[in-house]
Length: 195
Image 1 (cartoon, rainbow, N blue to C red):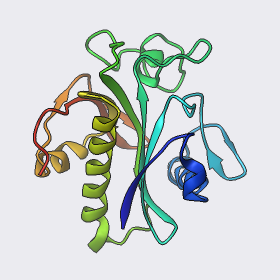
Image 2 (spheres, rainbow, N blue to C red):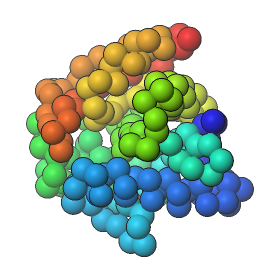
Image 3 (spheres, rainbow, N blue to C red):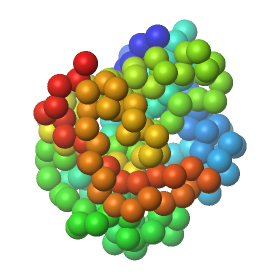
Image 4 (cartoon, helix red, strand yellow):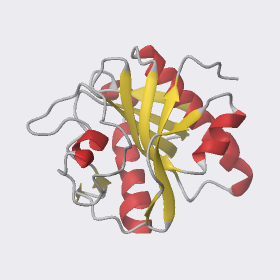
């Protein structure tokens, strides 16, 4: 099992890993959770899957086990910036605009982490190690990009797991339910030590 940070610059080196990750997102978010998201050819994507973003894929023998997307809070693409800021600005119908207690930041050192998933096909005995690999890949990838903080709308159980690997997630907004799963916005200070 390994973690790979994908970008538009390097995805050609990794064969079908990027499209397999978008297919795994489709399975997770559209097929299993019934979220109303754009898709084509069995791949889920949206306006934030641009060359400005990076994707962390945890994979084994070509199968994507987990993933997360990182987008700089300075991103711009037409009228869009990044998911949490656009939701706060009322541009997204599916996410409430009161998801953050403070104004969504715009700074080079802060990146948005979203679309986090672990495939339902990952066996229970392997799930914890896949989750840890995903968090370590997300943190390592973000640090490589110059991020010192992540902001994300994530499932609330990720807070316990992050603590186990030495990260502290601070609450940045109220708990909200999406497809029956509690989520909230968190900030993650990347200067803390990761075990």
